[in-house]
Every structure is written in structure tokens, then in C-alpha cells.
Length: 458
Image (cartoon, rainbow, N blue to C red; front, side, top):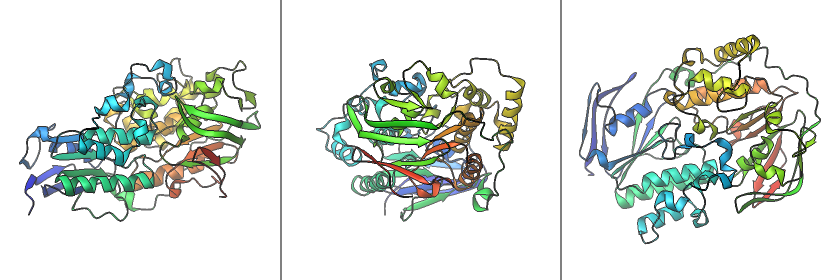
């Protein structure tokens, strides 16, 4: 029998009492909805929180426990030191490490070489971290943690942002680590991947547990979230251009037209170029000045500012929340959506204040308005970013993985809410790795595959 590495005796985590023995070589799932205490549980296991009710006994040194969190404050790469558009302004990110430098990759190390080859293509070794896609970034962060010399690895929501193929591949890698190297891997998850046999499951309850199990009624959006009259016919129009980031070509012969009121789902594997393509639509990418395309019926680079464009777009990205300071309040982050900057740079009107208050009430954020963003659960952070995108009632919504990191209850709530906001006059572009996340009414599909944008039926 494998030896016990962590023994837990009647440990209180919010509403749950946990007793368990975690053994060497086990793949362990810690399951619970948003705000159930999964991160707190991890902090206790690694000794960062010592004032506890119950007992935790470790047969290993605290330095032998490696913890990976993908968050605004605790991440292994500090995005808040950069600005969001910098990932596309490569000339402005000369001091950013490459993947090789960040991971301290050594091809002579069999463990690291084999692990890297199973997770990321070798061609990415010389790519700057800030140029990676969200899925590639997640993989690099996971590798950074797994490259550490440790006996226990704690991974917080590791499958978030990964497509199905990448998730299955990474699970196989984790199995290899536990079986071949006798490492213990603990996964903090809102919902477990289908068909995975864990060696041990620890369940945590939370304030949203009841909501996760119940049907969530349709959410009625505030009255001000009716799409305003618009003066454009075609939102985006590009023909036979090349999409690239740095020296990486993502899409060749790119052609796509998005008309007013259309609703599109953009799909593709991790690293295929979805987020980079959306950066053209959101005026975040300087390649716009080298490409021949139009936004809101106007050719880019003919005099309009990026702020003229952004004022008409509500944007949600799986990565954008990482660029906000963890000390910023929820209120400040939501209101920054009125100026399309990371920090609100003007006074707000009485009408804007009233709309803000109505929106945070609808999204159940009233009690969190003064809370530091970095202390929110992943589901709460996602809700804040949705509120930020909608607070100005834009005619165009770009939703890049809007439901990532949500438990079942919060997903149903926000899916219903966004479905109501996507009225017939609002233009919507959404990305998703799972078809269940597609919003009702999103009836057109574009897919990036093999450096080509295609338009499958449905």
C-alpha cells in the first residue's frame, strides 16, 4: 500500500468537514462549486493558512508541495505588470521571457523533455510568454508547476481554457506522473471531466451548491440593456489577408464578413488563433494597420481612433481579467468599462451610476462592490467581467470563453442572462470549446483549422 503523504482529520472548510488520507501516487479530485473553499483548502494543505479548525498532518516537507493558481494575484506569470494589448505589440515586450527561459527548459533532463513534448509543441520554446494563446499559456503555467521538484502537485482548475483534446492529453500526462514517478496530484475542480476515474474524491459544499443543483429561471436583464439604434450595416469585413502574431502565421487567406445583428460562434483548437482574430475586431492588434479590412463600415486606419471603435464593443476575454490589479475594487473594474480602459479616467453621469447599480443588483454583485478583485472566486471574477462589458450597453458583444471557470449553477445563471442580452439587433461573436456553452440564437459558425478559416453549417 502507498504511504500516506497528507492526513486530514475533521478539517473545517466553510460548510464542509473533511477527513481523508491522501497517498503517494494518487490522482485526487477536490470538487466543489464556486466559493466552496477549494483554494482555501489548497492553502491549508501547503501551509499558507495555519489557523484552522481540525488537523492536517504531513509526511513531507512543505517545500515538497507545489501549488499552481491561474489568477490575478497568485499566478506564476504576473500579467498585471503588463497592459492587455501588449501581447500583440511584440516590439513593446522585448523584456518578456520566452517559454524556454520561463520554464528553464533543459533538453538533457528526460523528465522535463518528455513532459514538455507531451503538452506543448517544441516550436513554442522560443515564443514569448505574452504571445501565447490563453490555452497555451495555461499549459505553460501547468508545466512550470510540474517542473518543480516536489512530491505533491496541487493544480487549481487546470482544464479551464483547454479544448477537449488538450484536456484528455493533459489527463494522460498526469496519470503518467502519478504512476511512473509516484507523484501525488491534487486537482481543484468545479466539475470533473467526464469519464475520469480518480483515486480519491473530496467534495466541498458551498453557498451556491443548492443553485448548482436546481433549475435556474430565466434572468431578466435591466431595461437599459436593449440594443441601441445602430448606424452600420457590416461590423467586420476582411478578405484574403494573413493573420499572424510575431512570426507565427495563424490563418492564411482570411476572409470573413459579419453583418449587423448576426450571431457567430468562433471555434478552433488551443493556439489556432481565435483570440488573435478577435483582437482585430476589438482594435487591440496593431496588425490592423497592415491589413485591409473594415470595422463598422469604415476601413481601419482611415482616421478613427481605437477608442471610437471600443466605445461600441463590449469585450469579455478569458485572459483580460488577469491584467487587472488584484487590489482594484469590483466597482472600479466594472466602471472602467465605460471608458474602455483598465482604470476609469472620467467622471460618470447620474444615468451611468443608476445603470451600474441596476446591473450589479441583477448579477448579484451588490455586496461585493468594494471587495478587492483578487479575493473573488473564479465565478465572481467572470461575473464582474461580464458586467464590465455590458455596463455601457454596446451594440456589439465579443465573448471570448465567457463561461470559463464557472460551476454548473453560475453557468446556468450567466448563460440565461447573456442569452436575454443577445437580442435581435445586437451583434454577437462568441468562442467556446463546448457546444453546450453556445448561446441560443448563435446560429452561424466559423472555425479555424490548419491555418484556414472555414464556415461549417450550423
